[in-house]
Length: 202
Image (cartoon, rainbow, N blue to C red):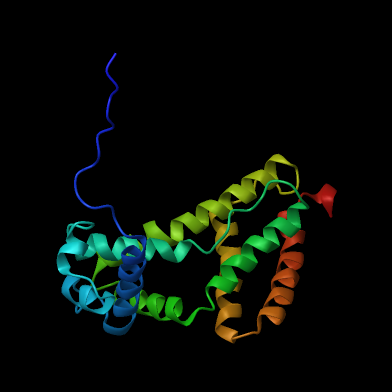
């Protein structure tokens, strides 16, 4: 029986270094110039790659920026299953708060807020690629809390998510040190626990 030779994919393999450079360049350019002046050519020049390198990966500037934006969610870690529930919830909120301290992310979100009305597709893309994944992670932890009896079964999920994330944005705006921010997060969760937990757990 003849030995089959594996079929190699056509073209050169993608470079992880180029991928990272393109994502970084795209985020920096968007933060500095906004969506109107954001272009494949400008990203290629900043990343030190040819336009063809980007077009092999993305069809247009929207796809390029959407992929780069998705990297903003990569630093919020997945919460492990075991452990004290309230410590797990506090750790997730700490991750969200700490990731918001990055100045590049702050400038990007300011751009999104200021240009979202003019470019609704930009706002929608950020909601889908950055905000919803974080909400989904938090929602999963809240659902776990309900199933474990740590949270009220009649919890308004969307209102609770807003109630938890809002203070993280506020703490970021105050410019607290990581140590002070972590202490504040713990205090906020402790204060909210009265309203979130069933009466039997208070």
